[in-house]
Image (cartoon, rainbow, N blue to C red; front, side, top):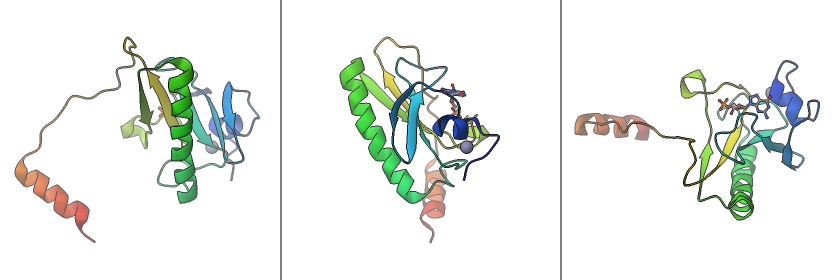
Length: 137
Ligand code: 5GP
Ligand code: ZN
């Protein structure tokens, strides 16, 4: 389904022009308007899914294969030194467009992308509690 008020529905389905670098029946991949680094692109499904949790599992697989393929091409063509794959879900995680998208971010030794976090800490008790919670059937 498409959502009338969703910008990525309109871009993915060609109603709004974009700098497209790849398209197939399921996805459009286009350059991010405000790139973190040179070549930053977004893999966007043509159907509307708000986030990863809504995304159809077959499309999950296809998106990851596409990321590998396009990431390889970016490395070759743009000469990037590294590569980030990023995907935000929910406002608290930095999602601003609520139509699933996977960020492809080629990285360069001297870029200013700064995709990082301050390393935290966890006590042995807390770690055990987490393992218990996350392995419970
Ligand atoms: P999020 O923060 O939701 O993970 O990422 C949204 C991304 O979409 C941002 O990197 C932003 O620059 C990009 N973006 C937002 N609106 C548009 C648009 O209209 N066109 C393009 N090409 N990118 C957009
Ligand atoms: Zn949408």
